[in-house]
Length: 97
Image 1: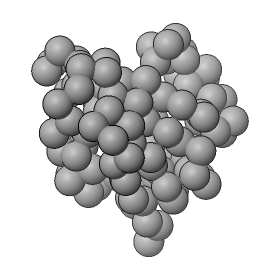
Image 2 (image 1 turned 90 degrees about the vertical axis):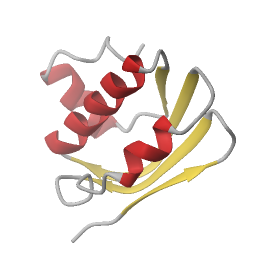
Image 3 (image 1 turned 30 degrees about the horizontal axis):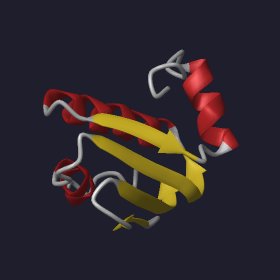
Image 4 (image 1 turned 180 degrees about the horizontal axis):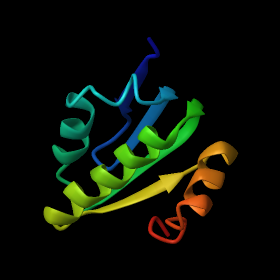
Protein backbone atom coordinates (compact mmCIF):
# COMPACT_ATOMS: atom_id res chain seq x y z
CA UNK A 1 0.00 0.00 0.00
CA UNK A 2 1.41 3.38 -0.96
CA UNK A 3 1.05 6.50 1.11
CA UNK A 4 0.18 10.03 0.14
CA UNK A 5 0.09 13.08 2.37
CA UNK A 6 -1.27 16.53 1.75
CA UNK A 7 0.24 19.33 3.81
CA UNK A 8 -1.18 22.83 3.96
CA UNK A 9 1.56 25.49 3.91
CA UNK A 10 -0.81 28.47 3.81
CA UNK A 11 -4.46 29.05 2.96
CA UNK A 12 -3.75 28.75 -0.76
CA UNK A 13 -0.58 26.59 -0.82
CA UNK A 14 -0.54 22.80 -0.43
CA UNK A 15 2.18 20.19 -0.86
CA UNK A 16 1.51 16.63 -1.96
CA UNK A 17 4.07 13.99 -0.92
CA UNK A 18 4.37 10.29 -1.66
CA UNK A 19 2.83 8.13 -4.35
CA UNK A 20 -0.15 9.45 -6.28
CA UNK A 21 -1.58 6.07 -7.27
CA UNK A 22 -4.79 4.06 -7.22
CA UNK A 23 -3.86 2.83 -3.75
CA UNK A 24 -3.42 6.27 -2.22
CA UNK A 25 -6.13 8.40 -3.84
CA UNK A 26 -8.99 6.53 -2.20
CA UNK A 27 -8.57 8.77 0.85
CA UNK A 28 -11.42 11.26 0.42
CA UNK A 29 -10.04 13.57 3.12
CA UNK A 30 -7.32 14.75 0.72
CA UNK A 31 -9.85 16.43 -1.58
CA UNK A 32 -11.73 17.81 1.40
CA UNK A 33 -8.56 19.58 2.57
CA UNK A 34 -8.25 21.31 -0.79
CA UNK A 35 -11.93 22.24 -0.82
CA UNK A 36 -11.68 23.70 2.70
CA UNK A 37 -9.29 26.42 1.53
CA UNK A 38 -10.92 29.84 1.63
CA UNK A 39 -8.68 31.01 -1.22
CA UNK A 40 -10.07 31.14 -4.76
CA UNK A 41 -6.69 30.11 -6.19
CA UNK A 42 -5.25 26.92 -4.77
CA UNK A 43 -1.66 25.91 -5.59
CA UNK A 44 -0.62 22.27 -5.29
CA UNK A 45 3.13 21.60 -5.17
CA UNK A 46 3.95 18.13 -6.54
CA UNK A 47 7.71 18.29 -6.03
CA UNK A 48 7.66 15.48 -3.44
CA UNK A 49 5.47 13.09 -5.47
CA UNK A 50 7.57 10.01 -6.18
CA UNK A 51 5.23 8.00 -8.42
CA UNK A 52 2.05 8.69 -10.38
CA UNK A 53 -0.34 6.41 -12.24
CA UNK A 54 -3.51 7.07 -14.25
CA UNK A 55 -5.66 6.92 -11.10
CA UNK A 56 -3.52 9.71 -9.66
CA UNK A 57 -4.14 11.80 -12.77
CA UNK A 58 -7.87 11.06 -12.52
CA UNK A 59 -7.78 12.20 -8.87
CA UNK A 60 -6.19 15.50 -9.91
CA UNK A 61 -8.82 16.00 -12.63
CA UNK A 62 -11.62 15.22 -10.16
CA UNK A 63 -10.11 17.62 -7.61
CA UNK A 64 -9.94 20.30 -10.28
CA UNK A 65 -13.60 19.70 -11.15
CA UNK A 66 -14.73 19.88 -7.53
CA UNK A 67 -12.77 23.10 -6.95
CA UNK A 68 -14.23 24.64 -10.11
CA UNK A 69 -17.73 23.88 -8.82
CA UNK A 70 -16.87 26.10 -5.84
CA UNK A 71 -15.50 28.84 -8.09
CA UNK A 72 -11.87 28.02 -7.30
CA UNK A 73 -8.81 27.45 -9.47
CA UNK A 74 -6.20 24.70 -9.07
CA UNK A 75 -2.63 25.38 -10.17
CA UNK A 76 -0.07 22.59 -10.19
CA UNK A 77 3.54 23.36 -9.35
CA UNK A 78 6.65 21.25 -9.94
CA UNK A 79 4.83 18.62 -12.01
CA UNK A 80 6.85 15.37 -12.12
CA UNK A 81 7.93 14.20 -15.58
CA UNK A 82 5.92 10.99 -15.18
CA UNK A 83 2.74 13.00 -14.61
CA UNK A 84 3.54 15.35 -17.49
CA UNK A 85 3.74 12.34 -19.82
CA UNK A 86 0.44 10.94 -18.55
CA UNK A 87 -1.20 14.33 -19.02
CA UNK A 88 0.09 14.53 -22.59
CA UNK A 89 -1.08 11.00 -23.38
CA UNK A 90 -4.51 11.80 -21.99
CA UNK A 91 -4.51 15.15 -23.81
CA UNK A 92 -5.23 17.01 -20.57
CA UNK A 93 -1.90 18.80 -20.22
CA UNK A 94 -3.42 22.21 -21.04
CA UNK A 95 -6.19 21.94 -18.43
CA UNK A 96 -3.96 22.87 -15.50
CA UNK A 97 -2.30 25.89 -17.14
